[in-house]
Image (cartoon, rainbow, N blue to C red; front, top):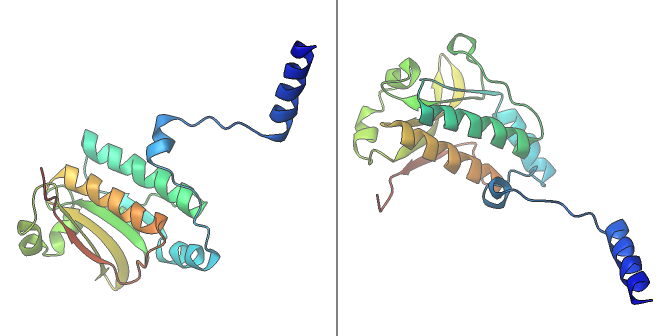
Length: 171
């Protein structure tokens, strides 16, 4: 009798509640769709594509994170672009040494004021196109900048006139 009641309860609960397994990645980095439809629409208009210039294991991680994060937060696959296809609303990330575009922006003074793990996120114009730039002196700074940018969207912060300079307090 007790076995039947226990079995009944298991079937009842499993029918009414769907268990969703979490992996370690989603426990830490959860890129769920932005719930505020007005913000979501604004983000989709502000972010039309992205590129991370340079090749290294760290930049590859940043590239993958930006792709996964934007897809989850915006609910669509934001395209990766090439430097020749630069358009309004693109995100360009890299270092002065890995990215000719970042190097052309004359951010050296600002970048020299931050730690090697620091980053700058700013909205600027390139060839009369408004873009978002994530710049750093080292690849790890680009990765941290990408995480910071995704966190801003995740917490539904304003990115229209974004201007962030960050350097870690502790190495």
